[in-house]
Length: 474
Image 1: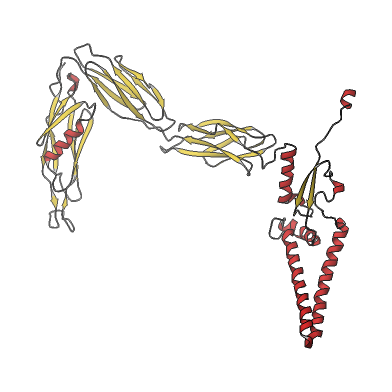
Image 2 (image 1 turned 90 degrees about the horizontal axis):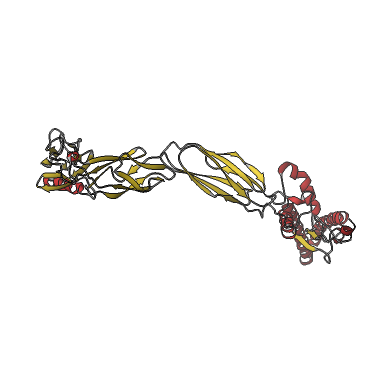
């Protein structure tokens, strides 16, 4: 204890001196007592004492100008000198009374000192020789002086710079993590809010589906917990939790995927008997989890067996050692991919489709459905479905022919990795499986659409060679 007492302690000394305009202080005080409790007339408001003092000063200047004017008139208008002398005396009396009241008030309040704010004189603050001085110029002399923005700013400056005490204006906030992407299911979690000691904060959500369950407010660093309700639609949505103190803050962003829907870049794949690998794309909203599962031992997922959101997987089929084709299936959530592996020595299934018909035209004199003003040509589609996969060609306009439709159908059938190949000769489309085996006798059917507003039948139809391809053998 003696050793501790032997050390001298040096405390930081700070002097805060408030300099305020001395004129019309009494008007400021009157305004403060009369209107602050009822109207909330703080210095920053239009009815506050700062403006009242300025208005009083303006009245004084106007009376002074009138007094000078009357003196000049008394000199240069001798015929009415008595009148102007009376007017000058009248205005002079007002000036004397205003000055007298103001001087008397300043005398009894501050002794005519140059400062009458928080620390009105050097005798009441640390002297400049031993303390850092913080003057507040243009401050307010009234009972609620600490509501002044001038005083607030200086006090915050003293606390922050001299004593390293964080003020609300100097507080900074960070959210960790700053964002989160989630699935469409209901979800609960939390994030950490970092800030300085003593910094006050509150947390507010801007979305009705994003609720704060705990940590709606606090002081210093803390944790904000939240819950998210399930997203009932397929459209993704974004919500924000805003945290801070009104002067500074940060945002925590939650992105929730829409209801999970999945599509594959292919619905069926055919592979030659020697086997091979193919990559299939998966389309899914961000945050939606998926996995690819094979039901056959000769068909494996060699890459990307699972994922979240958009992605892809690679399937590999081993060589077919037998004398029959093999059919397997890969399931990705509610989607299926049919994989057919050809056999080495069999034959491929074949078939054909014949397009028939001619373009129809509706004229103003047509029967039974006439056109209003000008000829209208029938429009529609012809669809050939092979093994459950539809191939469509459309037509419209005067130049549509059955041969053109047949050529279009053959073109759309010959895409990369298609299970069939096709060729057109006139109005006939010949179809052949790209691999061998009995399983290549795919189902075969046709359908059509047309303009039912002006026409009673389609312009073009397709007739299949049978309900399936034929000739595929093991």
